[in-house]
Structures are given as structure tokens and as C-alpha cells.
Image (tube, rainbow over all chains, first blue to last red; front, side, top):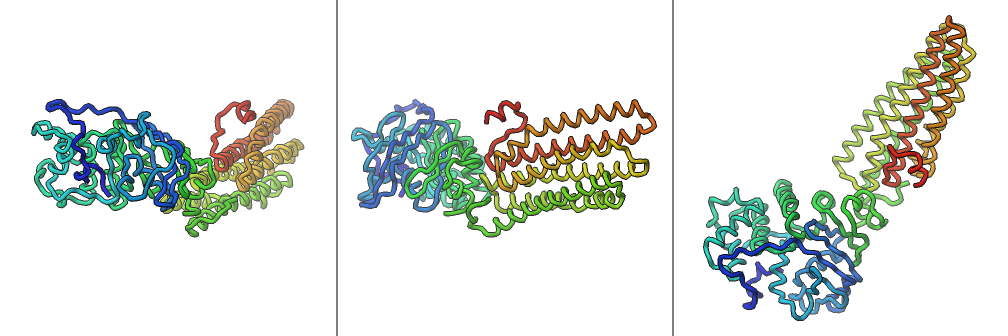
Length: 279
Length: 230
């Protein structure tokens, strides 16, 4: 399961194109309003009345035991679940800056450009580093080489990878280390200038150094993007995020400032989970 | 007061051991103080010597609590109430150690007083001791039971102790003027009274840390009205 950038076959020819020579203007991070969302896989309801308002230009962490629905909700935000048969939101709405993303007139391809995604396991294309980054731009209709070069450098710098790869942009991306591949995937997501970046356990396969680099990157990126991260690592949620939502059995038990959740949670279930008393 | 067991039994054991050491330290401090005061009131140098000797074990426990606390933070990275329990244990132990230091000071000054004829004003120390020690014991009790109202109730008692200390100091200064030959003796009593006042300050600190541990509220450095309104 991959996002727009990893799934060229899903791209629509109607994708709004940037006019040549005009760099896309990044919009400030967007607010994600999730209202009373129920979600079902077939007849199995996995989200119940989920209501969360994810603020812009901040990192929001989704935590909770396996199967609690946090990844399902994350994937609802860029409609990745549309790719799964019989998986659907059965009531409620998700709005980005006030617009219902499931409305019939919303272009899902454009939505996925605005809402980038990074996965648990890095998944670069079997192409060069340069092509990995430029792919999304070319698909979006950007053809001017200078503009693409500029965007590749900008994205790699934003992902704190430029200094490590600038002399081997034509090398195959598979030659990078695991941590570099993950940052390449982040750079690839940033290249199309999204407003929101969704991260599904982005560091779970990385060593501590690579994890620290990605966490530092998340800290840098939040000044421009709205970031939602799913993590099983409590310390990571505590370090990286500004807001935390605790999920349990498909419900949001508690949502609030991370400093509050990890020092004095309001709900007993949250306390028991984060202190390791059930899971 | 930890309701449910941690998935990691070793964490529960480490935290229980940390808290037990705090309680053991408090218990030893209480007995050291009792010995020091009895040494003063009963003019018993052996009790004073015992009180001074007790301080060594209390100092070692303080270091052990720091070591175990850091080890626990490193190994388990606790959060929420677990984190507060570890931090508060580490914050309590220096306050308890300083209370034990006051017991040592009382014992040393008592030995000096015991070399001279008894001063009748020595008995005036006892009510001050009773007030200070009840604050200390209640603070430790509030910490152990995570009892916020009990901890909060200790804070205003410090003012009462300060007032009683000020009154006694004035009385002793007056006596110094009336009987200059006993000046050293009265000076020792003044210092002993001040030790009681210090115990009250440390008991207040412990009570504040107990509130933080139980309710995640920092009530330090607030006007009394704000604490009352809580």
C-alpha cells in the first residue's frame, strides 16, 4: 500500500498542473478536522465516533495498542483506504481546511498530493536518487529541468539528505542505507509540496542514529507542514509530538498536549497504557 | 498506592525498592531525631552519640536512592505517574537527609549543653520538636499514601512553627540579657530551635513533592491563598 507518489497508476490526467517556470507556492500546514468518524472493514467496525482536530504546523502522534485503529484513521486522511474493497467511512466526516475530503467532487489524486505519506518500511523506486525525487514532479507536469533540479535539491535538503547524496544523485536508491532510504522517501513526499505529511511508524525499521535523524527532521518540518505520526514508541511520541491522541479499541480515549498526556493523563486507560500496565 | 501491576515486573520491583529506601530513610531520620531530643532533654550523651552515628547510614541511603533512581530512569524511561514517583523519591531524599543533618546538629549542641548545668528553658524545645516532627511524619505519610489533602494541610502548619520559633527565640534572647553567664547555653538552644524550624521547611518541601507525585501539580512558591483556593 503506497501513496500517490508510489502509485503512478492511480494518477489522474486531470491533475492540476503547475505552470512552467512558476515554482509551486507551499501553503501553510492545514487543519484536519475529524468529526464522529465510524469506519468499517466489511461488517467489522474498527473506528467508533472518532473526533479529533489536528492543528496545523504541529506534530500530532497517534498512539495505542496494535489493532486500535490508529493506522486506519491515518490512512483515511489521504483516502488510502479507498484502495481496499469494502473498507469505508460509514458516518462522520474528515475535513481539511473545512473541505470534506470524501465529497464527490474531491479529486483524490490532488488530495494525495496535498497529503503525503511515509511508511513503516522505506520503499524507494528501483531508480536513481534523482529520479525518485523528480518522479512526482514529472507526473504533476513539471518538465523544465532547472525547476526539477531545484526541487530535487530543495527536497533532499529539507529531508537532511542532500549533503550525503549530492555527489551521487544518479546512483540507485537501493544503494542507500535504511535510514537514508527512509529520508529519501520523506524527500520524495516533500517534493510535490504537500500541506500534510502522514507518517506510519516511520522509524520502526531504523537504528537509533537514523531514528534520531528522522526525528530531528520531523522537528524541522513541522514549521511548514501538519504532521501526523503513528508510533508504537512512547518515547518517540513524547520527544517528537506536540499533541497526542490515544486510541483503544477503535475509540479516541484521550487527545491533548503531549506534555500533559505523558505527565498527567486525564484518563486511567491512557495512564495504564503509557506506563505499561496494559497493551 | 500503585493500583495495577506493570507489564514489566522488574519495574514494579525497582520502584517498590526505591520507595522502600525512602521510607527506611525517613524512619531512620525520625529515630535519630528522637534520640537527639532525648539526649538533650535527658542530658544523655550516649543517645546524642547514637543520633550522630545514625547520620552515616542515612547519607548512604540518600546516595543509594539517587543511584537507583537514575538507574530506573535509564532502564525503563517511565512516564506519567511512574515518572513522578521516581522523580519525587529522588527529590524527597535530600530533604530527608537534611532533616537528619538537623538531628546531628541538635545532638552536637546537646552534648555541649550537657557539659554545663541544666537550663530550665531546654524544656521549651519539646513542643517545637513535637510540632516539627509531626509535620515531618505527616509529610512522609502523605507521600506514602499519595494523599493530597493531607499533604496540603501541612503547608499552613509551617507558619505556626515559624511563629512558635520566633516567640521562643525572643524568650531566649531576653534570658541571655538577664543571665549573661549562660550566654553560650542560650545560644545553643537558639540554634536548636532553629533546627526545628528548618525541619518544618523540609517537611513542607516533602509535602509539596507529595502533591506533585500524586496529582502532578506544582504548588511550590505560591501564595497561601492560591494553595487554599485549590
